Length: 489
Image (tube, rainbow, N blue to C red; front, side, top):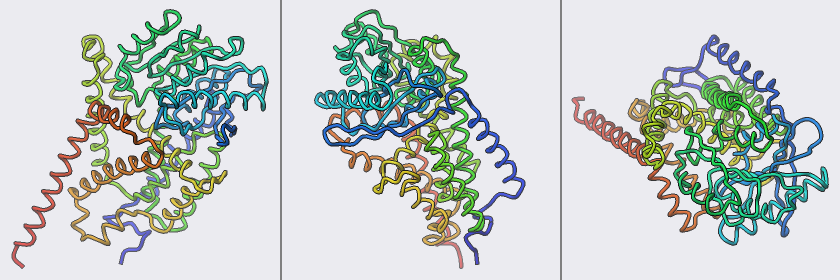
């Protein structure tokens, strides 16, 4: 009989040497990130403000010392406050604070006015708790730009410093702003670079610079070291290399992967070992109350325990092919890339290399947002969804393996079945995200139309490959089952 904590051929675990290597690498990476004094050590506090009877909760990233200037960062529709954490690191590295919060408002014509009032209320709360003469900058991404521009257009010029547009168009309110700069990835499939340039020429009060990076599209611009370094330099008037931002983002991506892998192997160990592992993960989340970035690896380590052991080589090949096809899809759909292919083709390998770490950071921060926002109890120390995940990881680790043994035979754990299961898991995650968006009120007709076009420009190739792999695995599984049924005996 197989017990939950045993290490069998179908439920492999790491040996002592493997755990030692994992622990050494993970500890070294953690220590490196903890000792980073270029923004990662910025103090993070929770700030609340109210508007029209609704209470908003945001995160304030502050360097040591008195806060003299602050960046108000506004995310786009269907997004969350965690996307600005990398930019907050770079601003803190330059002595400038950053405040960001979740906005439940969809950026329609009416929503722009509401969201600009949210920014005004946030600034008033910060001035009330810190300094009445607090100077401020504005930064927006995607649909967070129009309300930021609307607010900047009516702000007091002696206290307003600058406006940073990331991956979006300028609006008529830009004419009222003297200090504005725009940033975008050349592969942006939602707001094409040529149209951003046209909007700046039409609405900007002066010749506004458009800073471009060939490493990102619309969904990874917030994690592009070239862009976030450029924004922070524009705000602070400095000139830093993007290599520092790249190192910090790569460190977080690597830590997220190691945390998940460690969780998958901890699922094979004894209940006592799993309890200790879970305790460390929850402690890491709690530490994120002060530093923010440890929260993502904490969630992934627990999800890894639920997922259980995964075939390393197969999974790496699957992920590499999926994201490579995604990068190719994005590049081929980009008008800028097609028009400048002779000069930009040299950037393609670097873009494909960076695309996967950027998405790892993006998904890691998205998981943090889901866990945090799905907490009906609004617990401060550790959210209740994370406690539920931790409890399941302790009681029923390796959940897919348990379900496979419960509903299938040993043959169900074959290579083809694992591929089919992984494909089904990805499709299920996509469907679950749509359900979440529905309950958040973001599924409107105009958004669905926009998302359909974005899907074609981003996921057509990888989704087609995923469908082909699923059908092939299903046909192979059916063929094998028929062969066993007709075989003698």
